[in-house]
Amino acid sequence: IGFGCPKKEGTASAHGEPLGDENLAELKTNLGFNPDEFFHVDEEVYDNFKDIVKKKEAVYDEWQKLFAEYCEKYPDMKKKWDEYHDTDRFKDIFDDEDFFSYEDKPEATRNVSGKLLNKLAAKYENILGGSADLAPSNKTKLSCSDDYSKNNRGGRNFHFGVREIAMTAIGNGMMLYGGLKAYVATFFVFSDYVKPMARLSAIMQIPLTFVFTHDSIGVGEDGPTHEPVEQLAMLRALPGFVVFRPADYTETAVAWAYAISSKNTPTALVLTRQNLPQLQGSSKEAVRGGYIVSECKKGTPDAIIIASGSEVALSIAAQEELLKEGIDVRVVSMPSMELFDMQDEAYKEKVLPKNIRARVAVEALSTFGWDRYVGLDGEIIGMTTFGASGPQSQLFEHFGFTVKNVCDSVKRTIR
Image (cartoon, rainbow, N blue to C red):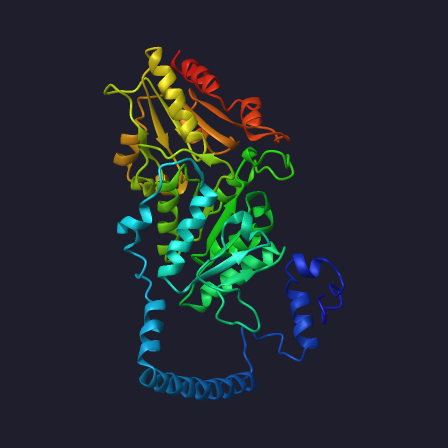
C-alpha cells in the first residue's frame, strides 16, 4: 500500500490519511508525472478511451440491430419483453379481489405470504427468487415453476444455499438487470448476514423484496440463538428501506402488493411462524403504515394501544377486557413505521391525537424506536433481553405479552 511514496509506503497512514503536498509531489515524480500539474489526464489516456468508446459503440449498434430484428421476427416475445419492463404492470394488485380474498381461519403470516407469492407468480412470469436453504420454512417456493439450474435457465426457483450475503447480492443484480422482480428469503434472525447487501439495496434504490420468517420469540424451542430481538430495529434504521410486520392475511396482502409494485424502495416482510387470527378491522389502510384497526366505543379514547404483527390480536383482546372495566381504548395496528411516518400530519393526528398521551406500544421484539410514538407518558411492552427456549405460548407469558400485562400497562398510563 502507498507504492511510489517512500515515506508512506507499507504503512496504515497511506490508507487512512492524506499524503500531503510534499509526499504527493514525490509520488507524482516517482510515477513519471509532472508534480506541478493537478487533475491532469495524459493525451495517451484520452486516445485509449476514444478507442474503447469506438469499439463499444460498434458492439452496441450491432446489439440494437439484432434486437430490432428479434422484435420483428418474434412479436409475441417482444410484447412479453415490454410487459416485463413496464414498471406500472403491478399497480392493479391493490384492486385485485382474488388477491385479497381469504379463508377466515387462524394462519401463520409466513403461510399467508407463501399463498400470496404464488398467486402473484402465477400471474406475473417475471417474478422469481429463492431462499438461503430455507424455502420450505420460508414458504417461498413457486409451485408454478421448476428450479433454476445450469440445465434449466427458465426455472424461477433459486436455491442459494446457506449464503445470505451472496443471495442478497444476487437478488440486487437480478433487479439491476431490469425486467425482473426478485425476492430473497431467510429466517429473520439471519437478517444480520443479509444486512450489508440490504444496505446497498437502500443506497442504490433497488426495489428488492425480502421475506423474513420466524419473526420473534414466537419461534419457540430453538431458543435465543434463533429468536430475533434487535433485528427489526436494525432494519427500521435503514434509510430508504420499508419494513412490514403484518398482523393477518389482509395486512400481508398489502405488504406484498406494496413490495411488488415498488419502483425504487427495497421492502421487507417480517412474518410469523405461529398462527394468527384474521382481524375483523384490518384493511388496505395498512398501506399507510399505521391505522385504527379497532376503534373505541365513544368519541375520544381513554388510551391508545399501538402494536404490530402477532401483538395486534393480543392488543384487541386487551381492549375488550378493559372495556369491561369501563376503560375505552383505541387499538392502532402499525405494520410499517416508515410508511406511517410518510403520511401527512392530519392523518397522523387522526390516528394518534397529540392530546391522548396515555399510550402503550406492544411488540415482541426490541423496544427501540417506539418511544417517538408513546412519548414520555407512555409505556412499551417489548423485549429488553434475549429470548429463551420453550413453547411459544409459555414464552409470551414469561416475557409479559399477556392480556393482563397490557391492561395493567394501560391503567398505569391513564393514572
